[in-house]
Image (tube, rainbow, N blue to C red; front, side, top):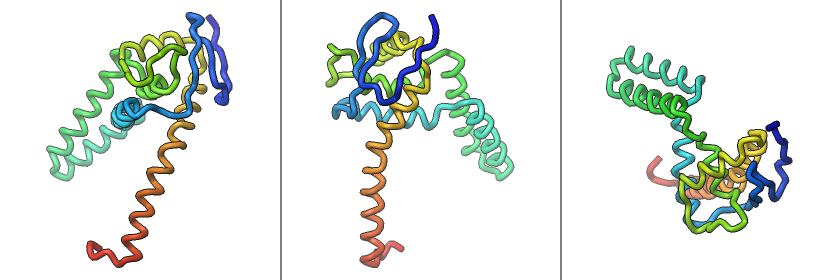
Length: 164
């Protein structure tokens, strides 16, 4: 089985099994709640560089007498490394499983077991496709969230918010 390259602009593709998957531009409300959880997992799980960075932060916390902070940082690093070691799917692929769906998939529900099966079916597809798709999804959602918070902050600043 060779690696397949799919353009990020593709609206659909077939998995190893021959099943057709559709790349939807958005999520249902039920799946958006899962997206928020997976974003946190993606942010706090670790890579090798993230692991080294967390160890450095723990070292600095210990040198500054912040044992509790160091314990939390080390716990996060251990949990992240355990994910990598156990072969759990990368959170970014689980995120893609939220909006890349089989033709007959019920989008109002989400199951991690079904997501894992999809990810296995995508085994021969270049990871760049999924990274690009996830990036496109984040670009659709994140700027809107940032705009709202910036607008609120700017409005507070203009009104002379007494908290500052």
